[in-house]
Amino acid sequence: MDKFIIEGQARLEGKVVLSGAKNAALPILAGAILAEGTTTLHGAADLADIRAMCELMGDLGVETIRRDDGTINATVTDDSQSHARYERVRKMRGSICVLGPLLARRGYARVGMPGGCVIGSRPVDLHLRGLRALGAEIHLDGGDIVARAKKLTGATIFLGGPFGSTVLGTANVISAAVLAHGTTVIESAACEPEIEDLIDMLNAMGAKIQGGGTPRVSIEGVAKLTGVEHTIIPDRIEAGTFMMAAAITNGEVTIPNARVDHLLAVVDKLRDIGVQVEKSGPGLVVASAGRLSPVDVTTQPYPGFPTDLQAQLLALLCLADGNSAITEKIFPDRFMHVAELLRMGANIRKEGPTAIVTGVGQLIGAPVMASDLRASAGLVLAGLVATGQTEVRRVYHIDRGYEQIEQKLRQLGANITREKEEQGFRSQDSAVGSQE
Ligand code: EPU
Image 1 (cartoon, rainbow, N blue to C red):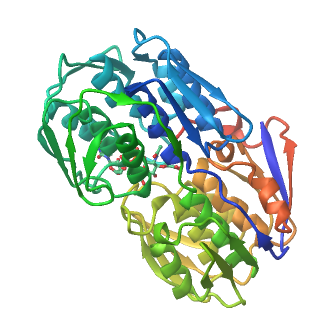
Image 2: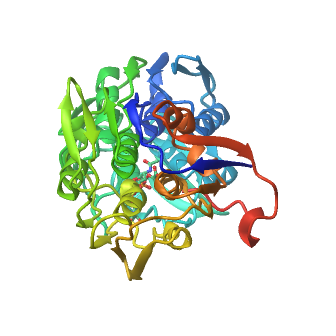
C-alpha cells in the first residue's frame, strides 16, 4: 500500500490539464457491449477503476486494448459470457452499469448485487424497477441479480428515488432501452454530464435518444448499434478538486480544458467563498487572495453542488472566516473524512447529514487515513495547507479516480511524494474496506 507525504503550505501556481472523466468512462465502456464492431474511446484515464472495468469487460467477452495515449479499443469477441461476478462488483460498484447493456444485447445478465459501502447504502432498486418496466424478468439468486428478456419493450418509467434520480440507474435503463422495441420515456432521469456523454456516444452508434441533460429522456429503440470513436469529457470532479486546491493554498491555477458549463454550481460557491474564478479561453483560472468567507452548501443531483466534491469543500471551509454548514443530500453518511480532519485541528460538528464547520486559523499536519476516493482528495487538500508534514495513508482509494494526482500537484509546486506504507498504522489498516 502507498501513502502520500505532504509538506504543507506551498502555494500552487501554474497549469493543470484534466484527465477524462472516470464516471463517464465506466458506463461508456459498458456501452461497447451493445455495439457491433470496435468501439474506440479517447481520453480514458489510467485509473484503477478503469483498469478494473476493462478486466470485467474481458470476463464478459469484450476484448479491450489500451494505448498509452489514453485510447481504449473495445471489441466483443464472445457474447456467451454474461456473468459479472460479485468479486468484481464488490471492488467497484460502477460495474453495475453492465447490467443494462448485457440484458439488451444478450437477453441475459447475471451481475453480483452490490452491497453497501463506506459512503453509505447503495441500493439498486431503481435500476431494477426501470429494467422490469421494459419487460425484464429479474430475480436474486445466490447474491446475484439475474435478469432475462427475450425482447425488451419501450415504456414510460419514473426513475426518481428518495434522494433524487440515479446516475448509473439512468445509464442502465438508457443502455437497455436503445435496443428495445418501441419508445421509452424516462422521467426524473439523471442530468449529469456523464449521462449526456453516454447518450452522445450511443447516438453516434446509431441510437435515437433525445433529451440528454434534462430530466425527461426519450429513447426510440433501434435494431442495432455500430462501434464508433468517442472522446470522453474532461473530469469535472477532478476540475473542482484542483480549483479547491488553488483556493486552499492561496494559489493561482489555470485549467485549460475545464468545462465551465459543467461546473456552474462549483464556480458559484467558490465565488461566494471569495475565490476568484474567471473564464480563460475554453477553460478557467482560479485564484485566491487570502480570506475565505463561510458558506452554506447542500449537495444535490446535477446541476446542484456535487456530492463528489463535498469532502474537498469541507477541507476548504475549515479555513474560512466563520461558520459554514454542508448538508449531504445524496449520501447522508458520507462524512468519514470528518474524524481525520479533526486530527488536523479542524473544528467540525456533525448533526445528522450536516457538518457544521467553524473556520480555524491553521490546520496542523498529521498522519491521516483515507477512507474512500473523494475523502482522500479532501485530506490531500488539507495536507497542502497544513503546517508541517501530513501523511495520507491508503492512497489506493485516490488512485481509483485521480490520474497521477501527485505528479499534477507537484507540477503546480506542491511538496508531495508517494512512499510505500509500513504495516500497522491504526487498527483498521489491514482491512481493505469495500469500494465506493
Ligand atoms: N439510490 C437509490 N436506489 C437506486 C439507486 C440509487 O435509492 O436504485 C440512491 C442512492 O443511495 C443515493 C442516490 O440515489 O442516495 C444517488 O445515487 P446514484 O445512483 O446516483 O449513485 P451512483 O450512480 O451509484 C454515481 C457515481 C458516484 C456519485 C453518485 C452521485 C459512478 C461510477 N459513480 O454513483 O461517484 O457519487 O453517482 O453523483 O458514476 C465517486 O466517483 O467517488 C462516486 C462515488
